[in-house]
Amino acid sequence: MESLGFPLPATPEREFAMLFSSTPRGARLARRLVSQYLESWGHDYDSPLNEKLTLITAELAANAVCHGYVPDGEFKVRLTLGQSTARLEVSDTRTERKPPKKPQEPQPDAESGRGLLLVAALAERWGTVPRPAAPGKTVWAECTH
Image (cartoon, rainbow, N blue to C red; front, side):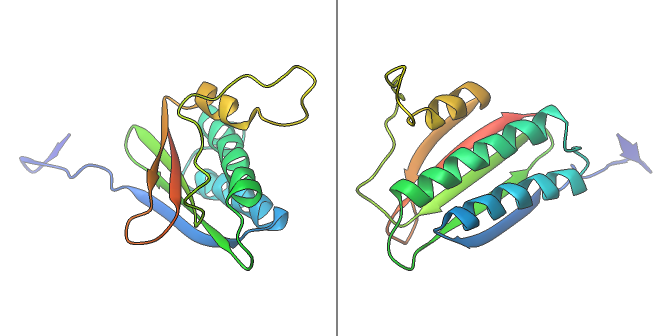
């Protein structure tokens, strides 16, 4: 698209980032705010992108609370919306508790252990990286829209 002979700049990325308490309440709030920001950016609550990223947020935030917990700790959520890709990152301060590169199927009667399987099924790409300049890790997931 051009205006007066000059190409218009690409739609700027939108970003939301916030620290949450490492509690179930913090995880619920993270999920709710991700969904609300996506809705305010034009991805309705029942849109495929909003539904995917809300579920991914729920799983990664729950994992940060359960497996990344440190006393009086926090986890960070960052959502970046680009022209064709949305990226969700959840960071916590536990270095030694990294998710497996390939999630394993839990036993059929297991009451937990399916979160990363859902993330892997919903996201086009996902992974984990060390937090830059801080202890801990960031688990990220990307979805196209």
